[in-house]
Length: 94
View 1 (cartoon, rainbow, N blue to C red):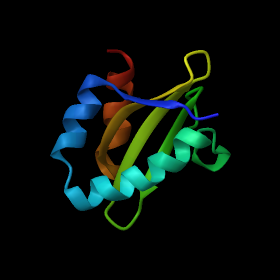
View 2: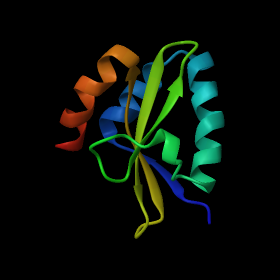
View 3: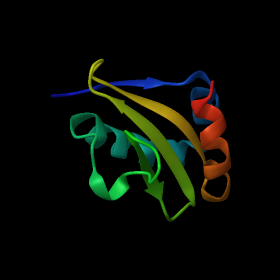
């Protein structure tokens, strides 16, 4: 089953600011994740249904939420590795 990909408003703003090269790499990963969104090794501890995509070479992370009822994957935030874990709790409260 293929899930729909959606963005939180704040995540989309950050997505637009990304370097095209970084965006391209995230797109490749997201294409795989909408087909199989629940990757155990990418699960975020302490957050149910939240997962991450890591781009180690450039130091970026993308956090997404899986909603099975709506068959959707929501991109919650995109940021540098050192900032994403500060931004994540605020993004979830919006």
